[in-house]
Amino acid sequence: MDIRPLTRRDLPAVSRLDARLTGTRKSDYWRDVFGRFVNTSDPTTHVGLAAEHGGRLVGYLLGEVRAVEFGSDACGWIFAVGVDPTNTQHGVGSALVTGACARFRAAGVTTVRTMVRRTDVPMLSFFRSNAFVGGAYVQLETHVSQE
Image (cartoon, rainbow, N blue to C red; front, side):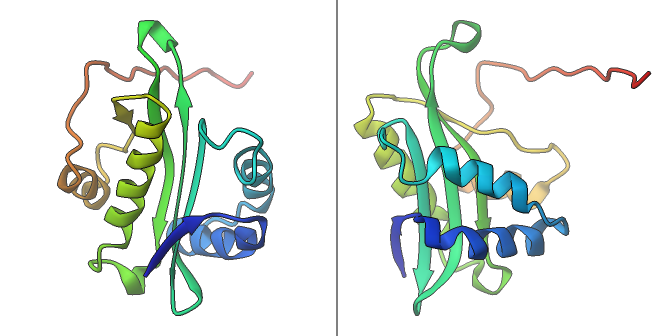
């Protein structure tokens, strides 16, 4: 398995894999994300990685360096990670996280964050197995009515 930067050629494979994982096709979303995060002029603040096995994309990760939100020091954020279900339990996701953390470290940040639905036990277990723990901040939300 190889970990490499995502390229624009990976867009269809990432979009298909995400649709397989989530059950929702989001072609416009992925076009927008790739436009902002893949082959950018500043690869130190935008991370886009692909896991490839046998010439086929089997995983992806996207993240970015974000600074001073709510008084936080600059930190890395992983906002998308996906692994082909036929390749789970083979270290694909962990290799992507390791690669992202190396990129974030090179950008000068010492903390990496992500957000996971509290009922998504497999994803929580995955991040915990990669040394993620509850952080110093609590995510809060409210629902606004559509009038």
